[in-house]
Length: 294
Image (cartoon, rainbow, N blue to C red; front, side, top):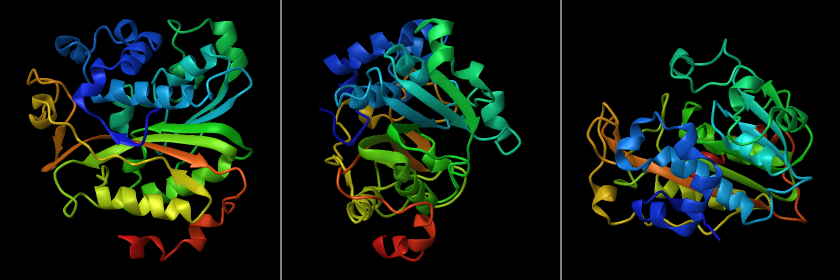
C-alpha cells in the first residue's frame, strides 16, 4: 500500500501509477497538455493517481461509499470515483471569493458541469451520484454529515499560512466516519527543513511541519500513515523546473517557487474507529497549540 510520501520520478514507472494513469484516462483527457512532450510525467498527474490509488487499495472506491472533495476544480477524480459507484459531493470556493487566476486557467469549478468527464462515465450515472456546492476550506461552513473518504489535490497550501492548512486537515476530519480516510496532496520543501514560505498565496510545508501534523493528528484519534521523506535521486528529481514552467523540456516534478524547491506530498490520514474528533469548535480549541509544535 502507498504511504504518505514525496512525489518521485521513479513512481511514474511503477505498476500502480501506470494502472491508475490508464484508469483515469489521463493521456486521453489531457492530450493537449504541455506534459505530452515529456511522456505525461508531471506532478499533478501523480497527485491524482496517488490519491486514487490510496483510496482504491483501502477499499474506498466501491458502490455504497460516500466521498467529499475540496477545491476540486476541473480534476477528473470525482468522475472516476462515481464510475466506481461512489456517491460524491464536490466543492469549490464561491467564484466571488476565488482568485481570478484560478478561473482564467480553468482550474476552478463554479458548477457541477466543471467536474464531469465523459471519458470516464455516462452523464446519467454522473448526475445520479455526483453533487456540487460552494465551500470555503478555511471555515467548512455549510458542510455536515459524515463521509467514508475526503480528498483535496494541492489546495490546502493556498489557505494563507502553514497553520491554516494544518487546521484544515484536522478540522475536515470531523466529517469522516470512524474508520474513514482523508487523502490530500500539498507542497513540500525538498531543499530545506528550516527556511520556507510560511504565509502568502502559496505556502510550502517542510518535513518538520509534516511531523508536527502527525503528532497533532495522533492527539485527536487520527493517524498520518507512515510519512516517508525520500525525495528520489534520479536526475529528474534533482534538475528542477523553473518559471515559465513546462518550457524547459524537463519533467515537471520538482520546481522552484519563489526561491524554494518543492514538489507534491501525499498525506494519507486514517480516522480510528473508536475515537471521535472534536466538532466544529476544534479550531478554537487548538488556538495556541499548533505554534508550539513548530
